[in-house]
Image (cartoon, rainbow, N blue to C red; front, side, top):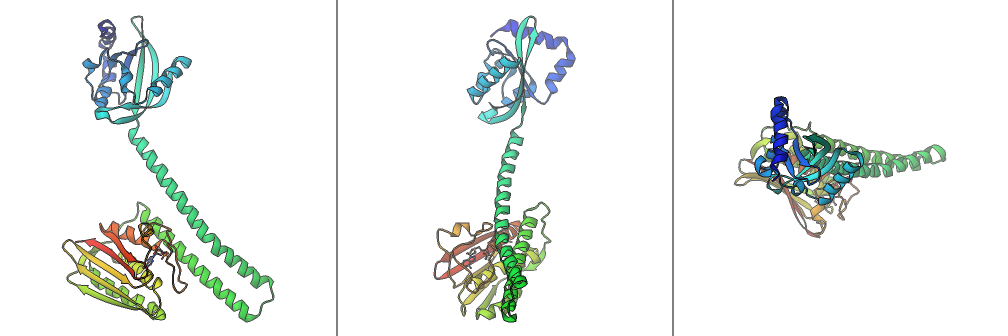
Length: 362
Ligand code: ADP
């Protein structure tokens, strides 16, 4: 250990009490090292704490061991040799318990008692780095989402455009015009449904999404939704049954849970052949109240089932009577149930049908 060198730097600090306070309180790691040999002459309190080192034990040690990547130290020194100082150099250092700290470092020459030293300052940006990574990931999801939404809206808009042009430019009889107008109306209904689902997803994903919870009976809510969906299911000759068992009171946002249940019920009807049945139940278990919706429809292929709750995933099962399909319903359902602290599940056998479960904690 080169005691002469460290004592001269220590002397300089001791002589200037303001500098001592600065070194103890500045929220950045500071190392002073020998310009030639890279041996530590001084480390400030922040550095010692962040890196879990003892100031005295560190004196005379090489600073190399702090670098995760030796090439980064090499690059830093090359840049220093070009400009005689470095600012905002991004590098990774080995922190306490072998953690990796991301930091912005600067390096500047200092002279103390004719000794050429280097002052290395390091500000920890590990948290920012993690946030940056998360934001990048979210941005990619958002772009993918936007791309899919734009793609899904382009086709119906194109169809509406060409059909309305036909009505305007061609001399069509009333019957043909009527048919085109019906298709335009149906297509715009589908677009509206997609836009509503998209708005729902964006509200649910946003920080403003909050549940308006109160105590309510899941069983009673299921019964109400089954009665409503039965009206439209009748057109396909599909009958819905409802079985409620035990006290099904939980804390819930009735509007949102109704939306989640409706998605399961309309899917069961949508992906089943005409004249089949759908069985539903609300049951109280040990720690949850579970809603089940069982259909005897097409079922879901085993290699696709893992994607079913993801946004914009439409699988090979398709609506049996030309109903709308946005691939967003189950993603919305999952978010709503998770916002209640619950979980969603599905079991299915292709050709035999599917059972969806929503579990709400008691
Ligand atoms: P959508 O029904 O609007 O397409 P969902 O998110 O509700 O969107 O469903 C995603 C996909 O999962 C559907 O496109 C369909 O392929 C499949 N699916 C959903 N429910 C069922 C079901 N009960 N039976 C078979 N397949 C289903």
